Length: 181
Image (cartoon, rainbow, N blue to C red; front, side, top):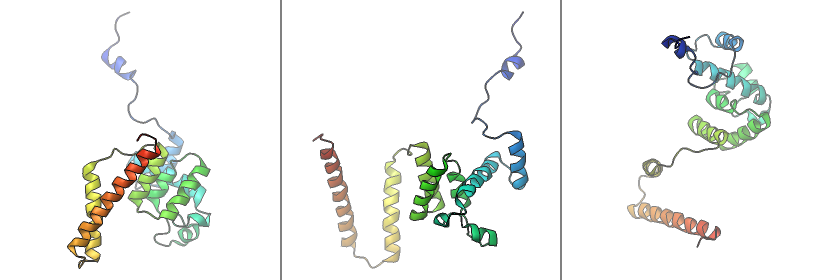
């Protein structure tokens, strides 16, 4: 018995990528529900969105993400499909409701909501980045200045210094609370 051919060895390799969460029958149903959707990720989003809708749409507490009555009436903006797709990835219905309730209280943008839900679900946060923090703070200042263009220069500097002092004071208090000081 000789060595297996290259094609035989290649066919025995483990498949790359994420493990499939659906079977062929469910894939067919998803394709039927979203014939215009071209990608597997898009079809999975339909699947997860439907899971979330099944749990949330009839409860008025979650009307901000899925207002069942308005959806049935065809009202524009009655649901937030991107947020629902991420909520549907939470397997436990009670946990999904708790996270959805918090999202409905905060009313963040879709991008922010997805980040919040993903951070909770995966129990990790993206790595900290100095430039991103600086840009975030600069954007906040810029937005304020667009609304209040007559704000004196001294106030901007004073506010930034007060913020820096608050960060330093908070950091010192956290260190002393840990007993490391």
